[in-house]
Length: 259
Picture 1: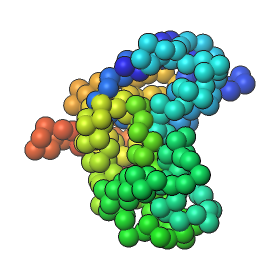
Picture 2: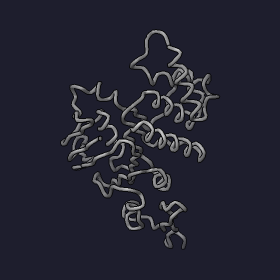
Picture 3: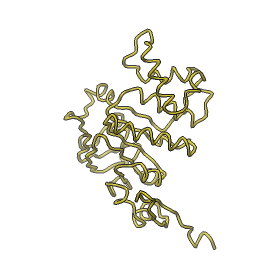
Picture 4: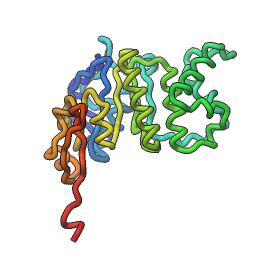
């Protein structure tokens, strides 16, 4: 279990997150939603040990995050940040193999190469294996970096807006794979998404942040309602249910904008 105990974050005098307490269970996909600038990325960076805590504690498996043990703490994570603008001369296969950087020797093993190819195949992008990373589209880079993260064999998986450049097919493919692997490998998974319908479809638990504070936490069917969404985004919506009982959201045009 990943535990956040009264966690507060700040950069200079700017408060980012205030007294956030959560318990995140293995085998569950947690999706973080909320308006821009509300601390979602900062929270992931803090969990990874990149952003110092103003106060509070982060614990996993009975151990607390500390600067002294930062390197060993990070080895538990598969972390894919927002920025995928990497101008690398390496091939796609070489970039994915770097997911095992901590265990690589001077010579690549057949197991490393086969594992990288298997990750590419599972995501439907094996045909890109020999392409140079710098020649790929933004969406292709996101899929390659996700394959790299999969190779790290993490205990905690964190993805920051992983579908922002993907078409509909690849959005679903990435989220389905993440959902399946979270259960199969008992990961604690956290994903930042802006697409509320995608979040509602795949999340076991939603973490709703606004103004640096926790607004709601729980299953999408219990958390998402028109009032909450209007408070978060100042947008009127209708909430419907799909055939599985999961909420989906339809935004409404505002009369003032249509006049």
